[in-house]
Length: 149
Image (cartoon, rainbow, N blue to C red; front, side, top):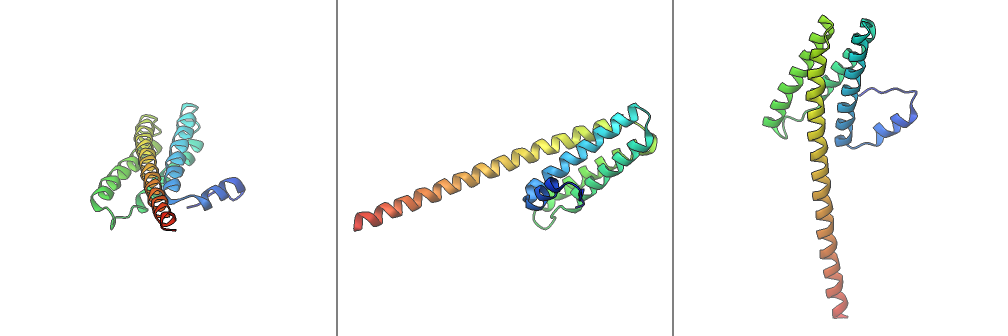
């Protein structure tokens, strides 16, 4: 993953992020570049829109190539198909200077981002519950040990 070397905050954020957080950042970046492309298309600034769409395309490719097919083959196949569709929308928008395919790509990316955030939230809740359960077990063990003393 490439990032702007001149922004030390962003570099630190990326270098310390979990894989789940990195994926969320990729969604954010793709959405941001799609919005930039739409603004540029509205102004008929095709050079800027082309650059923004190409950056969004690179991010979508990164999302696709980072899928772990060996872990969840069926899910990864569906996501790969989705990312291919988004990529094609961005290529179409870039080649034909259209904003409608960009809007469709944004809608799909935002849906995926929301789904990913929900999964992250559920995983955190489950990890929190597991930690609480472990703490309860440890407390029970300590109580049992102290009652023996």
